[in-house]
Structures are given as C-alpha cells and as structure tokens.
Image 1 (cartoon, rainbow, N blue to C red):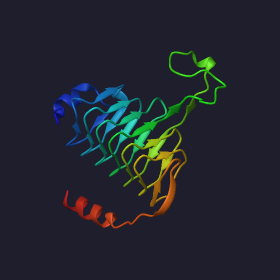
Image 2: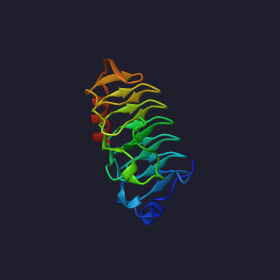
Image 3: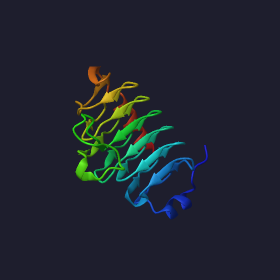
Image 4: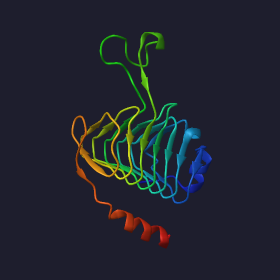
Length: 185
C-alpha cells in the first residue's frame, strides 16, 4: 500500500492530522477541511471519506469502506475499526415509495433521514456491515460480519444479524492491553 507522507497530508488541508497517520493514496476524500485524523489512524486503499468525520487514536478503516459523514458527522473513538467493505451513513432516502429518491431530485420531493453516527472506543465492525443514520455503537461492541445496524447498541455486547441483535457479552480483557500499550507509548 502506498500512503501519503506526513507533509502531503498536512498540505491537503485536513482539519487535523495527528502523528503517524497512514492514509492510502488510493483512498478518496471529499471536504478534507471537515476530516479529523487522530494519532496512529490508518485508512486503506479504495475507501471513500466524505463530509464531517472524526477518527480518534488508533482507528483503522480497512479496504473498500465508505464513510458518508455529510453535515451530521461520523465520530469514531479510539481503538475502533471497520473491516473490509463496511458502510457508515448519516443520511438515507425514504424507501417507502411515498417520496422520490436520489441526489438528482430536488429536496422538496424527498424525505431524507439525517442524523450523526457515533462509534465508541474499542468497537470493531465486521466485514460488509452497514451502520444507519442516528446509530450509536457504544463502547466495546463487536458487530459481526454482514450485519445491518439500524438501532443504537448497549456497551460491551456482541451483535450480529439483519437487523443486528445482541447475542452475548464481549470480554473486556483488551482494556488491560490498552493500558499497557498507552503506558509504553
């Protein structure tokens, strides 16, 4: 993978660029002045980041992910990550048939849901999963592959399915490792 240099990243005009940021030259971004890149975060090839986005420390966005932050915003807290092919949306058309859809249609003929998305510390989202507008994925949650997250979660649970439902508790052992890591950094 080919990443932008620190100097190149700073010249692009991102809102903030932390230390040791890895951002693929094959990823796309729109409105960089609204994108915050925390220390040690990484964005891989063929990702699209647009709108208001805040990536905390040690956040990883794997290949082929889409983060559509719009004006509402997506916030990913420290040590969170998206596996391959994930989608995070802060806006969605009304699919009921009551209104028109898509960006080519004037707003007065559409009913668009708009709400921020929050992804807490130590959240891991499995490959192919989608997170809908207004969802809060709370601290420590694990979202299984190909899940559809339509509602906010309870902290430290493992979720899976369409729609995503809690299936069991998630262990917190990783908090000990986080402390060791941060004390050595």
